[in-house]
Image (tube, rainbow, N blue to C red; front, side, top):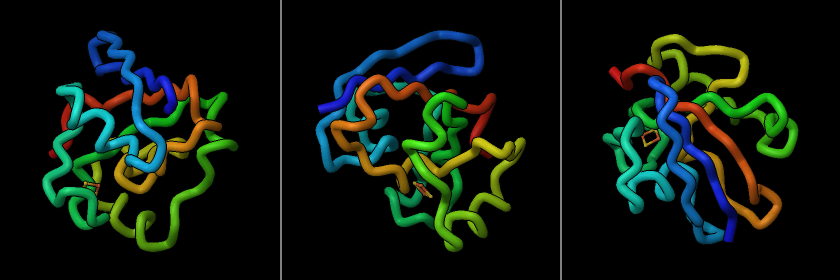
Amino acid sequence: MAKITYIQHDGTEHVVDVKTGLSVMEGAVKNNVPGIDADCGGACACATCHVYVDKDWSEKVGKPSAMEESMLDFAEGVEPNSRLSCQIKVTDELDGLTVRTPENQH
Ligand code: FES
């Protein structure tokens, strides 16, 4: 279990407990956290689960795969700390993770 903070573009924070093994995207969707659309359901095929990983966490979260990077090209406002949240698997080590969601996903 990991406590994850999702911060919306307007600054609204949502702190939820996410089960180990789920993705950061699933943690948001299952807890009705707004800001992540996840149109493809987690198949790394839509880029509507774009998040910005808090700088303090980027090392622990790791880098995107080549497939994820090419999908990120379809997201708007991509930054060096951008990730597709369906591709981040929740582990106990990610307890305390903070991600920010973009203004919109399309
Ligand atoms: S949910 Fe579609 S790429 Fe993440």
